[in-house]
Amino acid sequence: MALDLHHETVIAASAEQVWQELIDADRWNEWNPTLRDVDGPLVPGTWVRMRLRLGPVTVPMRQHVQAVEANRLLSWRSRNVADGIMDVHRTFSIVPRPDGGIVLTQRETARGVVAPLAFPLLRRSILTGYDRLGRALKARIEDPTPTTPEMSMRTTPTDQADWRTSINQHETFDHDSIDSLYYDWDRIGDPDGAPRAPLKFYVPRTTEDVVRCVTECRQLNQRLIVRSKGHSSNDLVTPEGGSVLLTEKLHGVLEVDREAMTATAWAGTPSADVDAHLATLGLGLPVIGDHAHITVGGFASVGGITASSFRYGMFVDVIQRLEYVDWDGEVHSVGRADGAEELDRLLTGLGRHGVITKVTVSVIEIDKHSTYWRNDATYHRTMEEFIDVSRGLCANPPADARFLRGLWVDFPLAGGRRLELGTMSVYRDAEAGAVQKDSEAAAYGTLHRLGWMAGRLPAGIDKAVKLAGMAGVIRSPRYATVKNAEFFTEKILDATVGDPQRFLVVISPIERYEEQFRRLWELLTHYRDAFDCFTFLSLYVKSIDSPYLAQGDPDNRRWVEFLFYVGINPEMMTEALLDRIADDLDQNCIDTGSFRYMHTRTGRDPQRLAAIDPNAHYNGGVSVHPLDRPVP
Image (cartoon, rainbow, N blue to C red; front, side):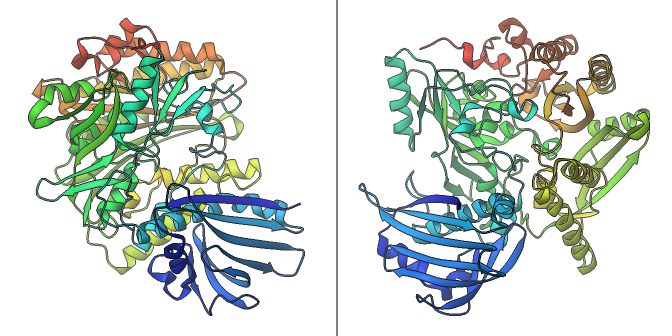
C-alpha cells in the first residue's frame, strides 16, 4: 500500500513562467528553501544527487529522474538502501486554472517495508517543506512589492525561512484542515472532546468579499462568527451548525511606511509572517505572538501579551489603525489620530463589533536574527523568594531590560515528591563573541531538536522529551538572538505532546501582585488536591505597561499577566468542573479589580463578563460572548 502526501499552491502566473523557475535547478539556491542544489540537469532516466532540507537537518539524496514534461510535470524517485525498503516518488504538477494562474501540486508517495513507520514520522517536516517551497516559488514569480489585496508578501531570505519553519507547528493536528475547523484550542485540554461543526464557511480575500459575506448573513438572519487560527479555548469560533468567516486568505503585508514607522497587513496574516517581511527591511514588530499562527487580527481582538509588554504594552497598544466591516456591512477605517475612542472600542472586542480586515501597527528598527541578548536569569527554590524577586522586577523593570518573564513550576516526582522551582529572566543587550554565538547555536539547536522529536516517539519517551524541554525552558540559554528569545517556548514545547494541557489567564493590577499570586496558586492547588484534575502546574508571569488597560488613568498602566499552563487528568477534569474553575477565576477577578484574557475559558453571564472584560469599559460597560451576540 502506498502512503501519500500532497500540497497545493495557487500562483498568479502562466504554466510556462512557473515551469521555467521549477526546472532551472542551477538557480534553486537563489530561492528554494527545501531543495538546496542538484549536481546535474533534470533529464529523464538520469540519476542526480540533491540536498533536501528536512526538518532541522539537510539530507543528501540520490534521485532517479522519471518524467520531465514541459509546463506540466516533473517527477523523480528516491531509492533508500535497496528497492523495497522505502521507495519515495515525488511529483510536481502544474495545472492551469479557469480564472487564470495555475495550481502547483507537490505530491509524495512512499512504498516499502519501513514506509509505514518512517513516513508518518516525517509527515510534518515533509508538509512544512512543501509549504515553504510553494510560498517561495509564488513570491519569486509574483510581484515582490504588494500593490493589490491578492498579492503575497515578498520573499523571505533563506536563513529567515529556515528559522520560520523550525518553529514547532504541533504534531497531532494542523490549523488549516477541514477537521480542525470543528475545534478550537479547547482540544489541547480535551483531545477526545466532541467536535462542534459549523455548517457554512466564508473565505473572503478582500474587504469587498467581507462586505458580501456580512450582507448575505444579515439578509439570511444568520449570526456570523469570525475565526483566524482557532486559538480560543472559550467557544468563540466554533458555532454548532452556524456560519464562520475564515480570515485565512486575508493574508499579506500591504504597506510599510518608514516615515511613520508603521506596517499595514491583512488581518489574517500571522504576526510571524509580518515580522519575517519586516526583517527584509531591517525592521520588526515590537510585540509579536509567541506562536507562529497567531494572526494580527486575532491579536487585536484579544489584546496580545508577550515578554516585551513591559516596554511596549500589549499588541493593541501598538496598533495605529484598523479597517473593519461592521455588522451592517459598512466599511470603516479608524486611527489613533482621528478616532482614538472608536479604536479603543474595537480593540479586544472578540469580533463583537464586526470583522477586522486590515491592521496598521507600529514597527521598530531592529535586526532580530543577528542582534543578541544576554539572559540574566535568577533561580529560586521557595515561592516566597520567587514572589519577592518577581514582584520587584514586574513593578520596576530595569531600564536596560529588553525582555522580562518569570516561571514558577510544580511537577510531581517519583515517591510522591514534587519539584518546585522558579526562574526570572531579564534579557539585556549584549555583544556576543564567537564563543557565545556558537554556544547559543548549539543550545537552541539542541532544544529545537527536542521540540522536533516531540510527537514522533512512543508515548512514554515523548513525555520524557517534553519534560526535558521544560527543563530547557527553566534553565534557558545564556545568550539568544532576539528571534530565538521571542519564540523560545514555541520552538521547544509541543502542546500536543504528553498530558492534555490548558491555559488559564488573569491580568491583575501590579499593586495586587503578591495577593493575586497566592490566591490563584491556592485556588488551583485546591482543585488539584481535591479532585486530582491537574497533573502539573506552571505559572508564567509577565509585566505589562499598557495605556489600554489603564483606561485613561496614567497612574494605572502597570499590570501583570498570570498565565497558568497546566496539565490535565482527563478522567477527572469534567466539563462541569472546568466551568466551576473558570467561574472561580472570574469571581477572583471581580474581587480584585482584575481582568481575564477573554479567549481563555470564562463564564457566559453578561453581567460578570462586563466586570472582567477589558473591552467593556470602552463599550458602555457591556460585554457579550460572541455566540450570544444578537443576530443583526
